[in-house]
Length: 228
Image 1 (cartoon, rainbow, N blue to C red):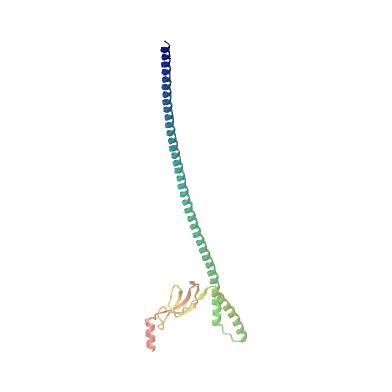
Image 2: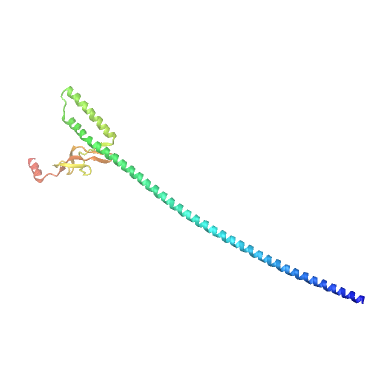
């Protein structure tokens, strides 16, 4: 009887041990599943975070690129405006400089033109007045020295006299106030300069008033032949 009881106790102990072992195995399997599940969930979360971060970074890059393009466009526009303003200012400066020079030239021309009749009077006096005494000669030399000084001053200002006699009539330089029929000179030749013309630089300051040769009339030519 005692042996049977011992055997029964041993069998129960073995049965309990086996049950505990099975429970431990079951718990290990459950824990492993839980760990696997947690590990899998952690990997998914990390991937989503990386994707989200990459997407946000791409969006920031796109925004910065758009801002850079906008700034480049604004810079190009400002540069273009600056160049236009600079070109307008340069044109304005050149125009003002040209207008200033034209005004200065006009004032210069007008002033010199007012002085030319004085020069004409000096030249008429020199050709018409014939000093007879020493006193008259002294006076003559005095005003002629004034005339010479005035001519030298006009030369320094760029004024030069025309030399029209013997040249062909040119309406750009001459104004014909008389015509004289003659066969001694070709028609249109300037025979005499009645009022001298002048240049200021390369521009006409005053046209010369001249007498121009004209072709003789047929009656005058035959009369000359008959006389000969």
